[in-house]
Length: 438
Image (cartoon, rainbow, N blue to C red; front, side):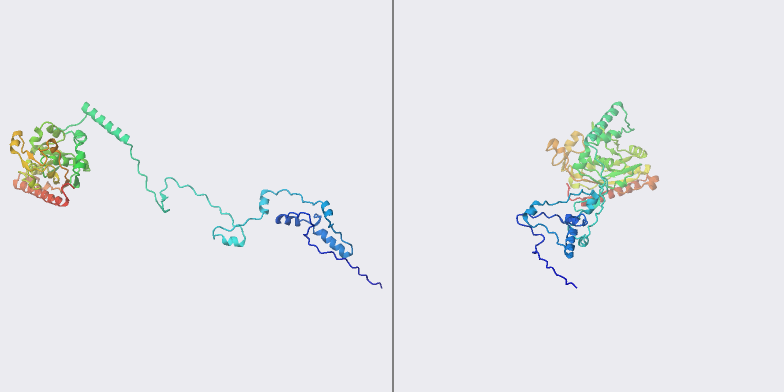
């Protein structure tokens, strides 16, 4: 039996696999993804891979001497490194799937769980915000709170259109005047002329100078007859014109007040003609009944010249109402009697005295002496800017008293009732007024 011989194998010096001879530049390291791809190739296709090393190891085990690489610098310098051929880039979709996703920390804590788990959050498909319509009723304000959008107001007409309308109206008025296409009643009343021409210069005085406040317009009927009885004062009868303008401009029905005036008014040149055109007539029962029977709104001032020409010391103290002829006219026509109280007219021309001699010379019932007239000449005719209040009281019905129109006691009692109502209202309005000019 032969004895087995043990052949000693010369041990090679241990060298690090990555150690390189001096003078050779270290090879460039490939990215991890590229190394992983190269290592994943099969052993048959890799010339210097794992399969060759396994073969060398197997030869050693069988007794064959394994082939070693030349460790000399010259041998390595003469050898050429074999670089793998670049592979064609896969399609875009495959390349995106093969590429490792880059995970970045979330900016907020909403997706923290997804970031820790290592899963890429799925993109959120948020619909694009639609623009808010222009006519939306809800809009954000400065603080971000959404509130209801106010309704857009109708645009105001341009000033040029307003002037064009006024010019066109004026030309149309002149044309009707020239051609005679306007109406005048039996008393000479011209409604269009009164509204357009006669009342126009009084409106700024009414609104800006006297600053009139009107109340009780609901007591004046919209249609039909009515008798308005008011106090009279102010030296010049501006209270009648102001009351007529209040009803024309501020009453819902824009009614014309047909006033009963004294003979002096209609005998004065120019003034009498304008009074006729404005619808006024003489203060007599016949004319008053005709106007009331035709459904007109009639105004009467029973105090007459006694009220207009009283001294300033007796202001707001009603004078005697005469014989009560206005009451008889209202009873016969079954027209309601509406008391009217006027505060403010007493102060426009404070009458300090009466020059009776001058009054007889000029044929006037009185010649007033005021703080400004006649000392300042024409400037003394400018009224003082007192504050005015006009109140229309509750109407006094005359339906049940129509058959007693000829009873003097009844007429006197009704006239006294109207006078007392006006007097008490004057006291109340004076308490309401803070001062003469405010």
